[in-house]
Each structure stands twice: as C-alpha cells, then as structure tokens.
Image (tube, rainbow, N blue to C red; front, side, top):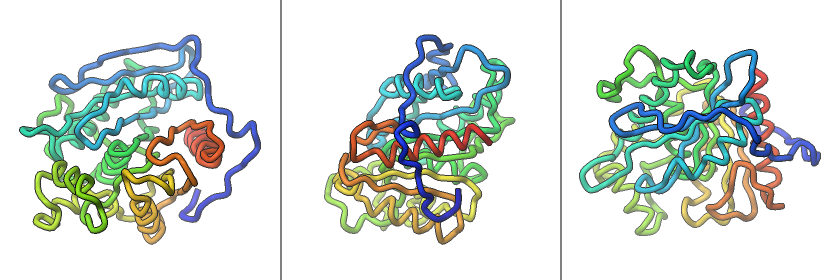
Length: 289
C-alpha cells in the first residue's frame, strides 16, 4: 500500500463480508480504568497469537456504546482477529473533554498489551477501527502514540506504549482547527469536545486534530467517506488524505456516491461495494504482515 490510491479487486469473492461464527471466545466487561471497560472476542483455535482489531464507536463524543459493534467484532474474529470494542469517557458538562477520551483509549491499549498473554494477543499488530467521532479518535490515537503531552498517570498500566500499526476511519472529523463552513450544530460539537472555540485555543485544536499530527509516520490508513454526508462534511476526509499524501504516509481513500453517515465496515449496499472490497483488502493485508 502506498500514498496513492490503490486499485481494488472488484471480483465478487473479494467482497464477501465475513459471517458471525457459531463459536468464538468472549471476554466481556474487562475493566481497564475507573469504570471503563472493553469486550474482547477471539477465534476459538489458533496456533499463534491473534492480531487485534480495536473498534471505537462514534456519537459526536457525547454518546454511543461499544455494544453497538459487538456483531462487527464477532465478524472480525472469523477473519482471524481478536476484536475489541471499547468504552471511553463521553463529554458531559463536567468532564470528558479532550484529551480525556484519547487518554482513556491509550490506557485500554496499554492494558491489552500488559494482558496479551492472558488473551493470546499479538499486540505488535493492532489496527484501530473507528466511525465518525470514533474515526477521529482512532486516527488521533494512532498518530500521537509517542506524544508525551497526554496524562497517562491515571492509567493503572504504565510500562507499555499505546502504539498501533494501522488505522481504519469511516467519515471522521480529522481537522478541528477549522470550523469555517460548518453549521451551528457541527461547530457546537467541536467546541463542546475541546471545551473552547478552536479560534481561541489554536494549539489545543491542533493537538486534537489528526490532520495536524501527521508527521511522516509509517502508519497505513484506510479511509471511507460518502459524498452526501451532511453530518461530517466530506472535505474532512479529502483534506486529511491530501495531508497523508503530502507526508508520504501510506493510505487508501474511497468515496461512495451514497450512504450519507451510515456506512458500515462490511456494507452490502451496491454503492458501498468498492469501500467494502477495500476494507477487506486492507484487513487481509494487515493479517498477512
């Protein structure tokens, strides 16, 4: 995979979404920090540790539930992943603003690495997968793993890093520094997440923006966005892709003609065919490495 858009196989067999297996191993409500937890699903049998798919839900940073992605996690086990759905702090009037959600997810990753032998995980091969606000967090976690500005002291696990090896992002807001062209609701959600208008704290907004954190990392991205998305404008993924290309970060970007803000990782609707093929190709390649 390179910084140019790769050609995806469009053969029918290449786009068959994995089915939920009848048998899998489940570890649910594993607490990693305060009252935050994750659910982990993995294949029953393997001769070697499983690569990890780390799934981050969306919800404008104010809502959402890891349980919404249980079926996706189980689908991913049939590909050979150990799949994790994770909870993180949501923004309220009192707490949960940036950088807290990122610090939570960093802690969850550290916990998985500490417990890798308990769960038979290959934590040298972790891909974050996020949707909407979850895509923002998936990219932010991936691009800032070596950033020392985060406060990790509340995490019970200290001796492991939160580094990941891949990012899948569906219709994420990757630039929180620029709210020009956003409607009132979209702007208010960014302000709510940051705790301040980005124009009044540009350094904070840059820290919270994956687009501003691209530093020539060798972290392969797979991005998808619908052209008719009116929740997160498509310019977000287009401009983020341009930045990845400028920095020679490996990526593939797919736009769909429809789907608005509802695209799934394994979406069987005709307009999502290329996106689904691309997701399967990306994940197959990730497993093969």
